[in-house]
Length: 198
Ligand SMILES: Nc1nc2c(ncn2[C@@H]2O[C@H](COP(=O)(O)OP(=O)(O)O)[C@@H](O)[C@H]2O)c(=O)[nH]1
Ligand SMILES: [Mg+2]
Image (cartoon, rainbow, N blue to C red; front, side):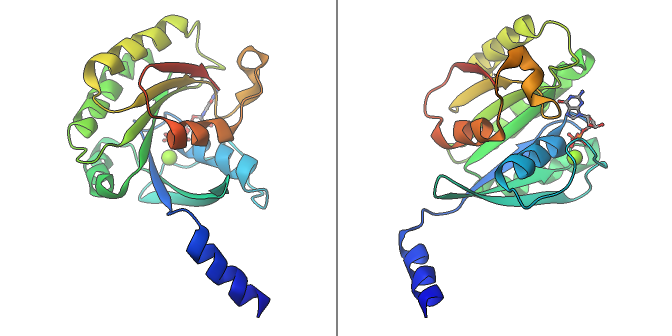
């Protein structure tokens, strides 16, 4: 009986589910970022962050974050799979766009795909650009600034540029990085032009 009342109460007062996509080129660290979220938010998860296989199809994870249900879809980033991204835009609240800081040769390609995606958004989707693998990349300051300038010029959506490492989050400048900060960013982003390390 109590569980039925609790269920009805939850249905009446819970906030609507927010769906977020994790996009970016293959090998950037999308699945690892989802694993980081699983390990830090969903304490029942007992996998290991950083052990991934190329994503074909999608990985999905649902979290309760500050009384807000959030569902993440991690989509495949290989060239042949990118045309599938647009099928999810209509329902998406936000996009976590993962860029590999250690692969500058593919930066133009990564930004080109983000520009293509943003041109297809019909709703005011929030965009968090996450510069990942900062644990192994050389000085990421200029790259972060470059990304921010690019976003200011090309995105008409609320955006933030974040940098860090999904695999070794706490290594960046000793800051206590949490997946919660990534989620928080997607949920609270209203204004453009925020640069944060996570
Ligand atoms: N050094 C380092 N490697 C990472 C990081 N994030 C992901 N990787 C590695 O990069 C490779 C691709 O990661 P994956 O999450 O599968 O990329 P995806 O194709 O975008 O989903 C894997 O070998 C990961 O272990 C990171 O922050 N730092
Ligand atoms: Mg993947």
